[in-house]
Amino acid sequence: MEGIDVIRVWTYITANEGFLRRTIDYASFMMTAVPAALSVRNVDIIVATSPQLFTPSAACLAGLFKRRPYVFELRDLWPESIRAVGAMKSSRILDALEGLELFLYRRAEHVVSVSPAFKKNLIHRGISANKISVTTNGADLSRFRPIPRDAALAGELQLTGKTVVGYVGTHGMAHALHTVLETAERLKGEPAARDLCFMFLGDGAEKAALKRMATERNLDNVLFLDSVPRSEVARYWSLVDLAVIHLKKTPLFETVIPSKLFECMAMGLPVLHGVTGVSATIVSREGCGVLFEPENAIDLAEHLRELTANPARRQELSRCAREAAQRYDRAALAGEMLQTLEAICERRSPEETRKEAIAYDR
Image (cartoon, rainbow, N blue to C red; front, side, top):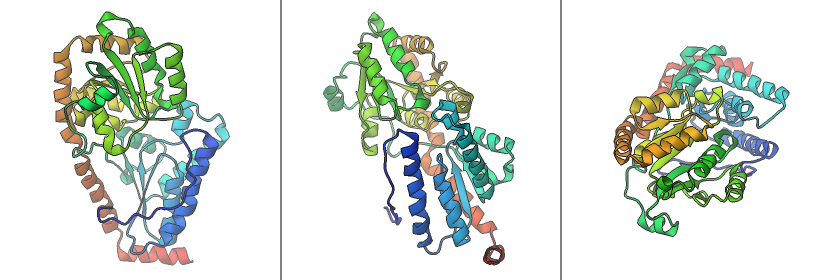
């Protein structure tokens, strides 16, 4: 792919539902990735990304066998996020997973966190600040940028002339999207919201339940769409007038920065942001959206009334979003990540590597 050799391995693929089947999915990758990694020659460094821990476990094992440093790229605090959404009740298993999590942080040569709050969390739990850096998510500005509404797609989806409130992404337990449906129900029938349509694009463990809820409540102002290829996402974003980002109201999610925030910035979309903490600070600082209380449909409905009645305000938020996107260019952030990896390789002298190899052999 673009000059990069990609080695694909067999994994047991399952839908985003069911803890046991998902665990088998993740574990199967670890079991096949380690042997595949051993066949790769001239390795300088091994990088693994979370949230689930089987990928960094594979990297840790490959690093031991190949006597090379491994870097843990931290995209989510897992398994703490499992506790937060109540996806698993067994605290004994979760405690064991947290023990593995801390071991992987300590064993890593370096941890690259996508949120400064994650770094604070790790330091509080005893991980040295010197081995943690922060490189946030960003947007691919070559793919996501302000574009005219796709008239053909709008006609196909019967959205012509509609003001579209869009949610694009995973429909999971963490996202508590019933709040957005409750908002749609509150606004249904209001004269000022007559042309308002709530569009949900994506998939996830909660999607079937959300569709049932919309049907039971006769929400004819709601449209559910299946996931589309990554290359098509910008077309669907072009239909959106106001983007919704939402997570369940829990302290853990105060530390996360949803990656879709940067896509919204790049598309020039005003954001209705139902997440507190670090990401809310970004939205406020950049002036690219308005904040509402998570899981508060009344608050979200009120902000929607205000913004649909105020086109000038929406234009100002859009302008700020476009300007902010330039500060979160994924190409620049990738360069920052590359510098981090190069620095790790440079500070590991041949003598240090030789000593580690001798110790390993013993």
